[in-house]
Image 1 (cartoon, rainbow, N blue to C red):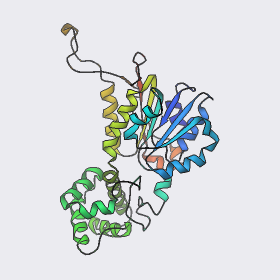
Image 2 (image 1 turned 180 degrees about the horizontal axis):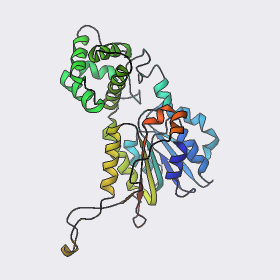
Image 3 (image 1 turned 30 degrees about the vertical axis):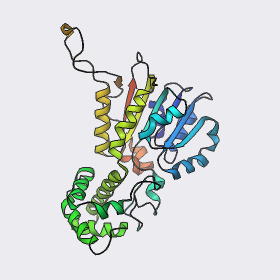
Image 4 (image 1 turned 180 degrees about the vertical axis):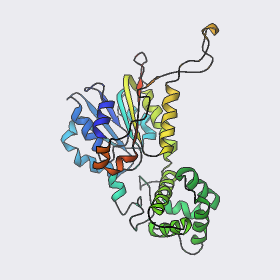
Length: 310
């Protein structure tokens, strides 16, 4: 949905924009193509390989693009260090990029036999294999249930703990075999279970859900009046979180005028642009089947508020 993203995001073609998850650079390239020569894009990614890739793929825009290896959890510090007090818009494309999913060495896909890593940044933190080696059966079941919404969570957690007594669960093939045993089936149903399990492990290893409100709130604090934040989520956990953040940031005061002052604590920063989530068209889904799960939401800062932050 790159063209839709650019249409929703760009309110001033001469502004400063942020791509908080630049990934393969697809959205960034379209955004840069719509900016005028005074416009600038700051691209972040916690995956150093993504930053290296975009340095090459987007070299035609080098004079209007700043690439930084950083987690958007540290967005406030990144903008401060870059001397940027205010941004015109920000894009958060959550989840995986296609190069990450298609790289057999990363462990993101159950289609390959590879090391069970699943980290966006392999220079820090622990891999999924390391997490599975130390987490309790109860904790594994909780993560599979809460982050993957996997109905076989308890059985799979038990199988994982039993397996690691004999052989560490260090490869995607080993985990896939355990998912097959837990689900007791193969084919499309197994594929859905495997996808949910890998999603859950990816979320816990990268602490993804905790990072989302930190990054989005930091972007809101630095958003120029009339500027927009566009978020692409790919599963219900992310989307519910984004919907709640946007709703809270746009909630008006509910106090009676007779009270004379606000006591409900509401501090609306702007508005939700679209009442309903935007989904890809059939044509977009045909061109890119991975876009089928995308859910786009847009927040716009109040034109009367100062978006700068010290």
